[in-house]
Image (cartoon, helix red, strand yellow):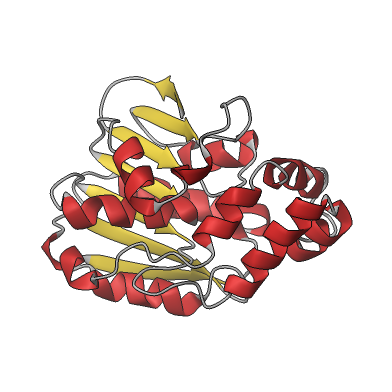
Length: 237
């Protein structure tokens, strides 16, 4: 795992991207935030070396990302699940927490078949099938190819996370003292809104924002940035 710091001073915000995030996509949540932003490059992504095949388990991810000191954090998809796993055992770890497009919390993914189909496409080298399963907007430019390239390295990760449960006992999140913002995407086949509702209900001090798009990081980037800067940039909120 590679840690890259941008900016300086407080607050220090940890950015944990999703599985298969491109380098540019991983930096999106850091845009406009004050202080220091530490953006992680997960193993097997961009210029980070591939991990051992047994790396992709939520306790392992939580331990790895937990080695970074920060007062607040943003997790996207897999990153959101890993942060939930971390704070379930370290409830005082952060002051503020943003969970973007969580895919699973106290149960395995309801869309495991889609993730397993992605893993199968990687196993057979079927890039066309993988692009079809990613299914982003036609006007997304090079994003589709970049994400396909990223996921082609991540067959073991896709297969592992398809059926894992990040926080088997959601009551463990009741002790989390952080303010929590959950951001969901409507009609996203990989990140059901129902999971975002479950996550928002699991934390004692949380709110949920649902964006009217299946791909908000492409179509509603300004709105996402406003939510993040408003929540993480105002320490008196």
